[in-house]
Length: 279
Image (cartoon, rainbow, N blue to C red; front, side, top):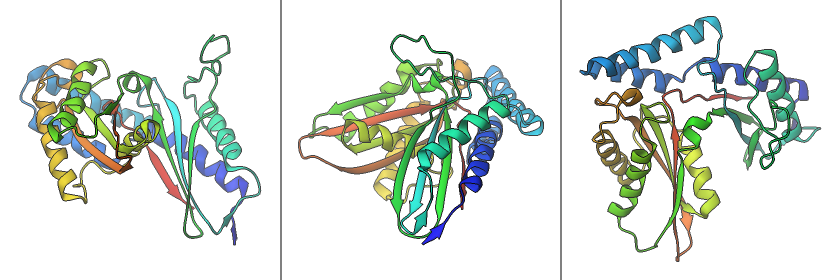
């Protein structure tokens, strides 16, 4: 059994909060640059230039890429041979609070979701813990801004739904989002499981690299069709039209009940932010 120190987890999660909020992932940055090179519309190209300039300044000055530093969503893969003396949820929430507060990241958490009487806070985060084989601990921080989270959709389709009906729901979800969630978008799609699990799959799909093909050939073809259909909407960067309404679609699936077809769409703005570490 391998014991991992509480202090090490605290330090690393705090660093992840800063990195995720100030540094775009490599795949995201690469696709934004590619979109800028390919864009022919003047204002759309200017919008993409502004996005890239903003990312460069954020990285250089260690400033938040966006003023909405999101609801911190944390994914934990904990090896079954790992031992931690304190509940890992407690450790992560403490680290998130410190990481956000110490680095001037915005407090966005309303602890009273109904009556909204509480002072805004830095935590708690949304934490998903998965027990895996081995003696390592992988932690991923995904700050999810609510400009895009508010545009996400889930629908319980009929189990007899065709591929076209599934794809139409996904495209329609992006169409309804319009320019309201800061495109170009990155789209995570979850299909299967239950209503709640499909939503988790969609969020996990945002963590998959967007510059690589899905290992499942059928899903890879589906993703290609969806990108083509979504970009045909001509919403474009910040709503100026153009080639890139979305820069990527990732699909993650899970077995489901014979009587159902849960489909969830989780939309991310152009500033898709996440950072991971394996201890």
